[in-house]
Image 1 (spheres, rainbow, N blue to C red):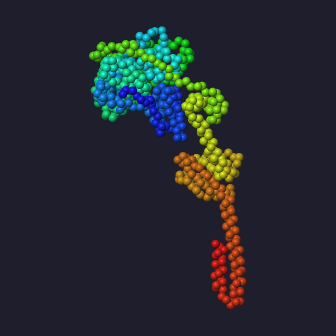
Image 2 (cartoon, rainbow, N blue to C red):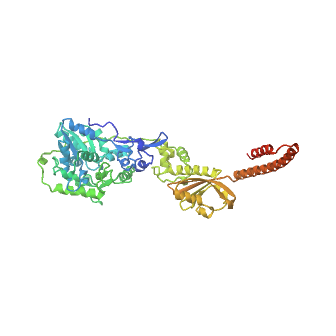
Image 3 (cartoon, rainbow, N blue to C red):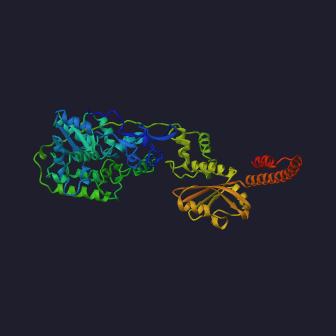
Length: 575
């Protein structure tokens, strides 16, 4: 029941907007961009992911989701066996000052039989660390992200990893040794702990994020001010309360925290850890420190991805220090003296290489991929990072490995879109003028230039009303409504059909100008020809009437009927 069956982070495909922000934020580039229904979607490659959670924190659309354990924990509490909460020491950074000790009472109100501090597991790990052989260099293994990083990207350094489980696992094993029938739920700020618990089902049954816990409290209507302070169940940790801050493990080990001491080092932040491990792997650090405390989150676990908002890093660190000082001065609890450490063998662990070896892309393949986005020389490579990769060549390698798509190059796609739109505008047989709300010309195509005799002149940036009668453009700017009207430009001897419409909420106006001068002149010529024809016909009819009248008189007939017939003939000609 305690083992999770899915990867802790999933992608909600419908929310992904191919902005590449997750790639930019991922230090190990464990994101694959896949084409899906003509759209690009970001997927996490589990074998490459170290579970730092940066993609979850940075995705603006909330497309990266962390699997929730809340329902499984509720089932554990309902199964009948005692359930023990192991609370990560970073909890004190989240709660307001003075409310830290309300947490044990709140958790017991949810149904937990015992509530203990994971810091006790950190104490056990530090005691075991002191028993390891000296004369070698150790990388701390309290942070599962750092362990993932070494196993997947720096396997040459696996021998340096301290062969000890994390404080979470140590505490879980201690609980199950002392409370054999119990189930253990770790509560903390780390996504990677959800995956680590799968590797150690003998120690941890479920992992609950602080964010899940606070949401649960809200659902139950719990708030710290409603609960009286209550002690955590023993045993009580001592120095290990400082474990979640940078340098906290060194302090717990009673090692020097002096920044000038080259025998120890404390580094936080995944990028900083990567830089340090890279130098260590390349042999650039000639004398590696005896102990290297590496934490993936900036400032330590107090900045974990599952922490609730609780001020900046300095505020969180201060809360941890205040809690440590308050606990240091507290009287011993009954049961503290009865605790026994776990044997060293129970705390030992092994590591395995999990590196994914990918073939180095041939130079010719890189050149071909770069050429698809118009990059033929090193000068064409912008290395802007908009695609998420640090350089164009790095992105080309990702395309070669199937991790990226060619069209992820934003500058190239923009140039392509602009060139296509310019191609269409320039090829239009009708004139096109684009102005801003100040009537300043932004674009004008060759057809418009020829229409108004602007060839060879610098037009862009000039006021349209200085060149033409801009009455209709002003009207569209004022009303925001499109126009379809005829406009005669006498000075240019042109009759223009103007289709004018606003864009970008009225900030830009586009005018499509159709020159209908020739058609209008043909219509006028046809009208004049008809008028002349009718006039000539009228003259002929008048003459015929006169002759007809004379003939009718000679014949002794009246002219009334003849006049009617001839009038009908005139109307017929006019029609």
